[in-house]
Image 1: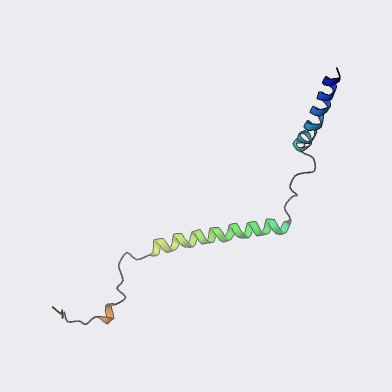
Image 2: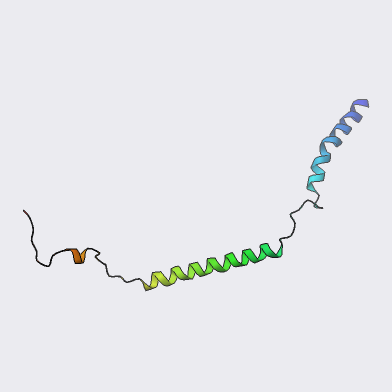
Length: 81
């Protein structure tokens, strides 16, 4: 009987912290402040504007290739062999 009592006391001591962690009272994250919520909204708006700008720039891109060295070449074909 003495062993059973000691065993139950040990089990209660070990189970106490686990039960306390499982309870939902007081240990949660605090609600976000209005400044944090405003920052999140601003970040979402900025992200959407960025995505819209990418869509506009990709649709406005010209399919023709541009040669940046065109004005550096001579108009006559002179090849050195």
